[in-house]
Image 1: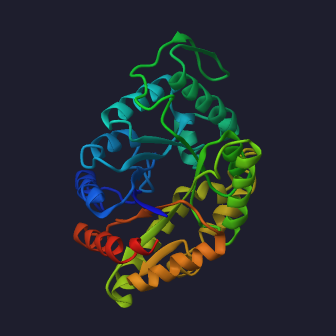
Image 2: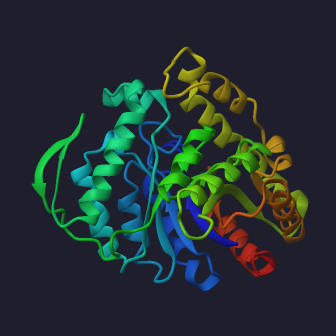
Length: 349
């Protein structure tokens, strides 16, 4: 299993100023090569403490590329629904060049109604915009010239510049949350899948669907699965819990608040059952996350056991993407955690 660093800002100006937050993140990125973390990943969200410090993951990853020479750089994930494919294709080519061909591109549909309403986009267009945007970006990257007559974006024969450093293009990931169709679609298309293991044991079923669709699509190998976890590694259990419980709970409260429109009455055929899914997430706590294996918190020995138990629950997966400085965690605390995890946990996997 590979382990990487994920940065999911869950703060606002009153908690941690943006300049401080990103300088701390880049300080952690600078440790990746030394400690063996295989990737750096960051989200795309808007307008809310839940992710809103990162409206453009490519900007952060461009800076991160200058603090590591080995780690892969992964968008986790960009949102075609709120962006012009011509612009995204050019930015992808640019970052692939700046990083020396280390970029991997994760795509997501977006799921927060407040973002859709502020951008003036209908929730009911989510699937169609995602499929069209991702296909147009793929074609712009793979082909020297591409024209499109889509429902949402049209353009004449166009050469996207810069051309990708990786040929025919950087690897693609699809972010999937809880819908089986998303896992099946990723596997059938031959893309890697990134997910959040909030659904506990159900993740085993979703991963199996992805692997089956991958093989049925005739793709070599077994695909790649990346799961995201809160991680805090500490010399003693009491300290691990004391330093992380409220920070995990703050993240969960922020997610529930950002997605509260689903519980408040938002509906869309493109998001079946999201009112129930988000209501369930609103009940999650630090304790429930640790108990179901979605947060790896404790001593090195305890985390090794947590990882092993989770693998038994859901089966093998290739990559763990670790939130290492969640909420307002001080830099020195996060540094101690990632160093201890690298020296005492990673060699066992």
